[in-house]
Length: 326
Image 1 (tube, one colour):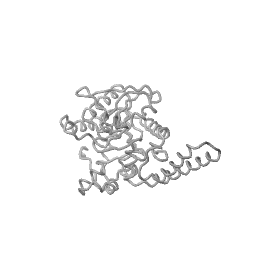
Image 2 (image 1 turned 60 degrees about the horizontal axis):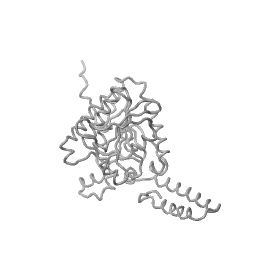
Image 3 (image 1 turned 60 degrees about the vertical axis):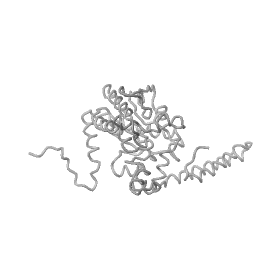
């Protein structure tokens, strides 16, 4: 039985019944009962996921079985060759980079990788990227620029790694440089928040022409627990913080911080990898097709204006960089 979240208990009861019946000798009547229970489980799961709270969406985004960068690479791309190291210090396993083909088109891929079991999570540092991870990503972005390859980015990280060695090697500088340089990369960049988009750890590779979010992913300046600890000195108020932070895909789209929402199958992407991949495939293909006719100069201008517009709401926005009128 798949791992269930706390709010999926009604589905869990039905799945246990299905499991128990499946262990008995097969009969036509028993098969009909199992099929009826499966349909009922799907209905209940759909009802639950249609009314998820922001905190429940955080739990879905963090689900240990949620498809990650390498899961999508395996299903969407061909001839994937992973590229390692930043050519300065080390290879950060929390960020995966490489080159591949997408429907016959050469592309570059960058994405966070959290790991699934304990061994993988330790190897991947739970998706917390260090400075060398962002520098590795930038190296691949510059490679894509040189060889005119569109870039596909998958975001799934709680945050950048805050440890002492990360600070010693300049994590803030590495993220800042990426923000600057990604603004100037002329090839198309499609960013997909597929899990947890946390703070500067996400933003360090999330500057793109199209920023899309899967339906049950989250995107935030800080995790709800950290927000609650700072504002109320009580991490247990994380549910309240999740609601106040406006971190869901619907919130992000309403605020103009993303360009679109990628639907997920009933029960979330972790419930059906193939269906989730098909929906990502559709959105990615459309995004690349929309950007293909643009020149590099047009793309850079549109990208610049996209990010300049962020934060306008409720303010009299003035572009101080504009030349004064004669």
